[in-house]
Image (cartoon, protein in one colour):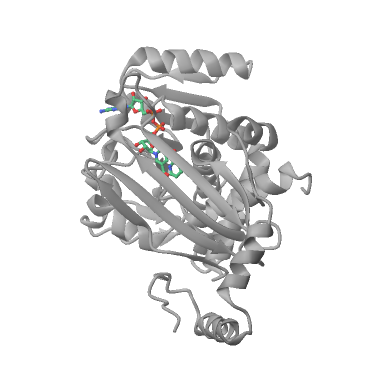
Length: 358
Ligand SMILES: NC(=O)C1=CN([C@@H]2O[C@H](COP(=O)(O)OP(=O)(O)OC[C@H]3O[C@@H](n4cnc5c(N)ncnc54)[C@H](O)[C@@H]3O)[C@@H](O)[C@H]2O)C=CC1
Ligand SMILES: O=C(O)C1=NCCCC1
């Protein structure tokens, strides 16, 4: 019997389940033992490579990353991608998190498993270790054989900003002049770079809790891009005032942005994750339309937002025209969850680029 309970994705059609059952029955009745299978496996040389952070940086560009991000969500919206339930295994105050997926696509398809650990206790080690570790395994969709393993910490640097660019493009469209970045950490910096590359803002304001960090980032970005568009803001209110696009990317466990400060019709990419609160105040959620890349995951994981009665919409549904794009006057929020199939599309892209196929 096929246990399909692990598919929580309602988009799995009966036809696919039927096809799977047929194939499994066929496999079970084949004159083929698991011992033979194991013997054959032992003869296989290691089929995969581990690609380093450095190799990924050499291969990827924001344009290529954008295409992968968009294709993954298009396929998800048309039912050609499936994802398992996301599982969090507690290890004392730490955890192991897993998600798996299947993306059906000639260019970006594959099977993926993402393992991600967060060990807060690593901070206290002598010497300390990074808190987050993750590896992403890409398997061939025709054979199930592992093709490549890539480090999650590097991939997330491309996936998250690309998905935000995509959400900004589809939910907000050609944008006005001002981008506001709240939080000058890793994701704040990458969002500033990627969004400015695609939308060419005339001003990019950066606010950070420790002002010197925002100042350093602004100097660094102006220098790297030989520009003067990057500027610091002293207060969150000043940063978001009249901004067309806003990014919140902090580790704050208190609200930072108030609805009364935001321009009507602005688009917000909300990146920071906290189990207790949100970076945007309740009124912002109540008065805006909130989109995500994965509704089911958002409904389970984003409890503080669900409690407000927010009904999530999927950005993929806008891309494929299943639902209408928001009006120019609508204030929109993109609440990024990060999905297995996005990581699949990126891992496949990197694997093909590495082998000189793209
Ligand atoms: N959805 C996803 O897949 C991912 C989400 N994230 C989330 O994005 C956020 C930013 O992550 P990174 O840029 O990697 O972290 P980071 O450590 O590089 O930067 C965090 C920033 O938050 C600021 N911050 C910390 N506490 C604050 C407070 N109480 N008030 C105001 N600012 C505060 C710090 O000054 C720092 O600039 C985090 O919440 C993280 O959990 C990060 C990676 C993946
Ligand atoms: O490094 C992180 O943070 C990651 N978050 C989500 C999955 C991959 C890595």
